[in-house]
Image (cartoon, rainbow, N blue to C red):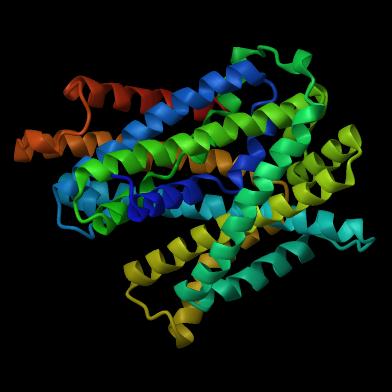
Length: 394
């Protein structure tokens, strides 16, 4: 029976998946073309959803409340814990760098529309300072702000798809160069990197495996559909060369809005697109920031208030902010680095942990995927190939 709890779990996955990375998809996949991008999206969705089920399997063998780091420690020992720590920190710092870069770019684009011109470093500082205060205020404040923004994001997304759809030119849907796929794979992987919340969902659903299966399948399928629709309207409305030119731009997000406005000449679409990009960056920034803030507080055993709380705040936002100030156009590259960490943390490690867990417990009732160790070996091989391609493309 479909209930509100299942709906809530699905929305948690959708909210975790659809963030600032969604804006990068039409640009990142421009060289491979629409049809190829759909194939790559489906493959990335399938492999990352497989990783999510492996994480659930491993988590079910441990006490409720176990997170990725404790899962790695209990199955792989200290080496696994160290790898999980490093991958988790690099992942969150990479995502924050991407969202600060993209958010400040969006902020700058909005200011330029009202004829206010400021340097990129100023908007990066303002964006970080403003929304870091929301994170420092606590999870309740973040929850209240995020709820309102999420409803606005989904509503504006649907409006944009409907408004841009009449401007689609079917001839632009072509098969691009498969050789360019290596440049966008990590961003696609990041776009389906929702599995980090699976341990929290297991606790929320009180080990109800059947409900968790439905939540993971449906929750991951909705972002896939949204991404495909998004690529349809953006790639269909813009010239291929315009999208490809944004690949190497320091202003990919604001540049996308400018290109769309130049192609369509519709004030409503331009306004809604600016609003949508702003919300995507803010919600993604808040979610990742809160996760990193709590992770550092727990790992360093520091309180979240007073001097210790301010120390955590500096540790959370200083590294990514400095990185963005040194390299303002890091948005797409940072998402790529985050994708490599997703492969390690949400794909490779879960497969190895599941193999170790199956050897130790021998509990067949916890197996959530068919295929046995052949599937686990396939996931590890795919992870190695993805990491190799990520290194080769850079």
